[in-house]
Amino acid sequence: MRFFICGSALRGQPDHGNLQDAEFLGVARTAPRYRLHSVDNQHPGIYEVAEGGIAIAGELYELTNDQHAHLISTEPPNLYEAPIELDDGTHVSAMIYPRDLIGKLGWPDISHHGGWAAFKAAEPSAEMSAELSSSTAAIGAFAAGAVATGASATGALAIGALAVIAFAAGAVSVGVLAVRHLRVLDARLERLEIGELTVERLTILERTEVPPAT
Image (cartoon, rainbow, N blue to C red; front, side, top):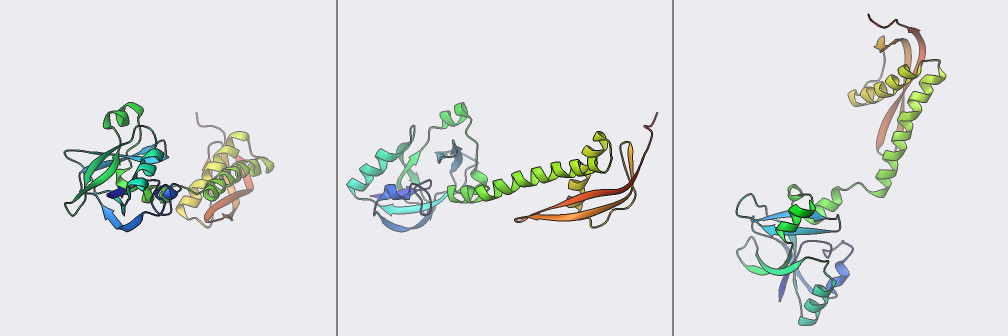
């Protein structure tokens, strides 16, 4: 029997082995009549809609009876087998997720990705997550660096935010800036590269206190 795969059993996904040595027939796509949700970030939940559907990317396999029985036995809870329509008008079997459970459990709609593999590819890798954590620590260090120059705690936090703004704007130099109760007369902006992420550090060289506006 022909079976449409669109989730964690795709090639390159962690459960591909559940297909055993089933014959790969090629990439496939559903007719644009379905929505795609992420179920606990573990597998997709798809269901048919009358309007607003998309074509979901997947793969088509030829399964023997034994392969089919094994695949069904490994499927997560709540999924059920049902026919779906492919973009060429033919119908094959696939795993469907109950639409009422999507709403009840609040699984997010990821239809804009067009498929499960694209959705997973768009997730930050573990390495990127570590880099983002490092960048957060670096931004905190900006504020600490401002304190070391003698700035007030309020001014230090503002300088930390200023560094992020300068990075977003692609700034390479700093002129005269007013930050809350602190006027920066001279400062040095340094670039810090963390993997593919670039963050810039602002060091206050000369400053003066400005009385709060009344």
